[in-house]
Length: 105
Image (cartoon, rainbow, N blue to C red):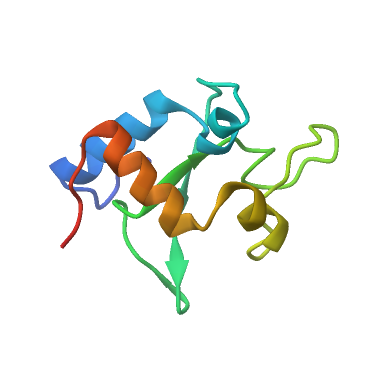
């Protein structure tokens, strides 16, 4: 099972664009191009799909790493992450605009 399992062409284009962009939190911190993992947004206990994903460095901004000094989104939804970087939906909207994607249903 590879990282593109269950993805259609639009999913693959989005994933390629965000992986090329790099960690969105590092970008906000002024450090563009940091390699990232694909973080899927979950709401009401449901993963929303591949189009609803963000690039976050891992470990660091995705999963915690005490050595990095970065504010991680997990475990749970860290309120400090949200207060510094915005909500997952705000970050998604920003990336969609910046990368020229219209992913609204």
